[in-house]
Structures are given as C-alpha cells and as structure tokens.
Length: 381
Image (cartoon, rainbow, N blue to C red):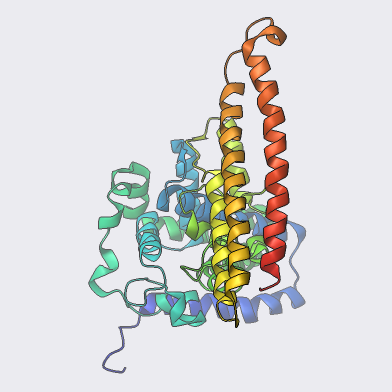
C-alpha cells in the first residue's frame, strides 16, 4: 500500500466483490439452467422498490433534508427498508449526505466529490477509509440523534441488515418452495441493483444531464436516471432547492418518491411537506439561462448591442414574472377565505372574478415575454 493511501475497508470490498460476482456469474447461470419463476421475479422487483424507496423517501428526503415529517409507523417501515438496502444506518448515511451538500464538489470535504471522477463518486469512496477520524463524527446530525427510531436502527444496524438480507429472501423462498432461487434473485441480485441505482445519484447524476437551475455545482437534471432512482434524477433542481420534498416539480415528472410522500399526506401519515416557491424556481431557471447567454455573448466581437438588447428583454421578463406571481398569491389567498351564503353577491366573489381576469392577462403577458427571451437567448446557446 502506498504511504499516502487511506486504509482499505475490507468489509465493503468483500461485500461489493462477492455480491457483484454472484450477480454477474451465478445468477445468469442459474437463470439458464433452472430459471426464475414469476413469484421470484415479482418478489425481486418489489423488494428492489422497497429498498430504493426507503433510501429516497426515508434516508434522503425525510431524514437527511427534513423536507417533510412522518408518522412513526412510516419511519419504522422506512428504517427497516434502509437496513434491507444495506447502505449503512440512517444516522451515518445522513451525516455523509449533509456533508456532501455542504461541501459539494470540494475534494477535501465532500465525501463523494464528483470532481474526483466517476469511479470515486460511484463506489471508490466506500472502498477506503478516506474520512479518517471524521467517519463517526455525527455533529451535523444532532437533530437525528433525538429521533428514537433513527437511534434504534443505528444501534441495532448489524443484526437488522443480516435479518433483512438473509431472512426476508429465505422466508419468501420457503413460502415459494425454492430458497436458492429466491436468495439469488430477491437476495443478491436485488441488493446489487439497489446499490448501484443509488450510487448513480452520486456519480452519473453529477456528470450526465442538464444544469437547468445552477452551475454552482456539478449536479445535473436527467429524466432517464429518474427512472431507476425513484425520481432522484432531477438532481440539479435538488441541489439548488434541497429543502423541497419533490425532485420532479411537474406533474408529469417521474418521481414516485414525491407521489408516495404526497399520497401519504392525504392519509395523515406525512405532513409539513416543504416546497420551494414557484416564483423562486422560475427565477433561478431564468437567471441561470441569462448568465449562460451573457457569458457567450461577451466572447463575441462588438457584443455591446446584442447584450443590451438581451438585458432589456430580461428586465421586462422579470417585471412581468413578479407581477404575475404577486397577483397569483393574492388570488390564492382570497380564494381560501370563507364565502358568505349568497356567494355570488359577496365582495369576495367579485374580488376573485376581477383578480382572475387580471391573473389571466398577466399570465399571457409573462408567457409571451418568456418566449421572446428564450428565443433570443437560443440564438447564442
């Protein structure tokens, strides 16, 4: 071992190597010689989803970022799923992740800095003890140390992971009459896929995709990655608005973690769902586009005229955006007021009708100006 290299974490190396080799060699061999039945395939998919959602819904959005609050039953189910996913305890995972956000892309302090390359951010950071004495320093998670479920899982993590990763597939295999097949599919293959789908968020999501809201960090938005990471692929948005319980803000964005949290709120199992204000999201997107376009225009000869025109359109756009969202907030606030019995004669009713007309007009003006600005900026991007 070189003098300046960190010590190897042999437990992690062995787990990743053994499970990886079984998935690459033994699972395909078994599939060809014996085959996996429908029950084994279904169980593998369901267990994979349970593990993945426990990380995204629980470890990430609930505990690391506190984007919402949850009932103890939800917390318990997610804590067990996290142990099943075998990605360390909630406390440790959250501590690493908070450090990642606080020091993103800083090679000295970000535990899995993307600027150290794909291999390091994907898995290399877990193969050696790079953090030294900081490894078990949980000072950035004092809030989580007051959570009884978090600390119960942390203290009992080893036996919970063994029970989940061997016990659940073995039980399912016994019920299905084939323990070997279930251990290979819902046990080992599920674990390897679960690991690497999560690891893609640290690696691919920082090098593949668009920087929609900011280039202050390497995080990218990628709807393809969202398909295998349960909605975590909209990573540029997440790093820009980390307190938002959503990653995909549009209704059509594939974000099952968001859908789960929102659905659970209707059942009173989650509450306090935090969202970035719509106008802040829109402003960040436009500001980033403006900065990118300005930087490209500045490289052109005789750029003053073009830049002045772009900035003028941008100023108009901001004014129309601010006017639109100001009226929209007022409109929503008034609609929430209690109406009188004779609603059509009430002052509130007339206020709403007037605001609705003004809102539609401002929305149209905003959309037209946005198209004008986007069209102009596209000429230089």
